[in-house]
Image (cartoon, rainbow over all chains, first blue to last red; front, top):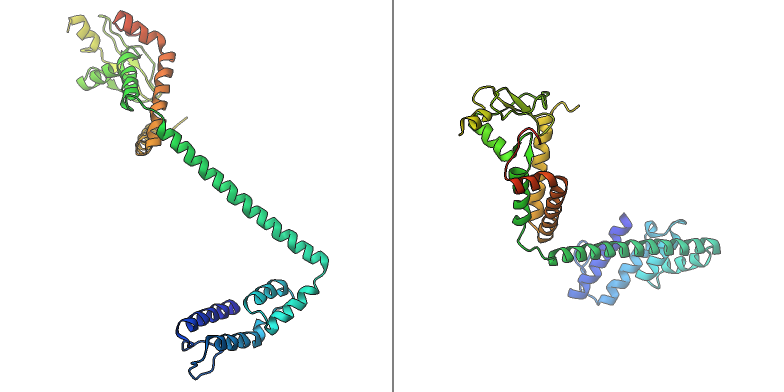
Length: 221
Length: 66
């Protein structure tokens, strides 16, 4: 963590030095007095200070990774030279494993990237096709037909749903307690009697004995 | 056995209506709804062929025989 922070600070200092030809105050590894020299000199000082710090020396396990980064960031420094030497001492089998591992990771990354791109492209295509599909008559045409069929044309327990709704609102039928569905069929003859039916298992409709819809029919209403 | 049939019934309707509303907000969703409704019309006509044709042909509803 400290190493990463150091690198970030040095990078920032170099960038600022490029701009203003001076190192901003508070930058580590720089003498207390103000430095007003060329950018190259500042960079050299910073690199030397960085390489000299013991915590920036790579451990045995980090040698390969750090040496690569150090060589890239600070070529020519002692750390880079040591890292380069350590790289040459890596056993062939370790190097092979590292290469294979890196290639495997790259392959997985490439595969996941390709897969996600293919999925998003497929979604875009599907959406575009759906948007381009014609919908003549708008959505209200099939919806209206469905409502007409279900409410007006198809009877349930003797009446269509709209008739049952009318009967219920007019007080000639009522929704009873659950569990009594289908006990009787509605009676629309002139004989009176109650009728019970159901659309769902928990709902039943009851036509009362007196004043029911059958009575209205019989009376010629 | 469902102990709360009304809650189930109401929840199903709410989910259906909200789902339809959300789908109808986009053009692709509207297209899906459009063809789903047509499919439902066809299914209703197939499964209730007799009732519909009787009503359309005879014009009367014989209660109690449904």
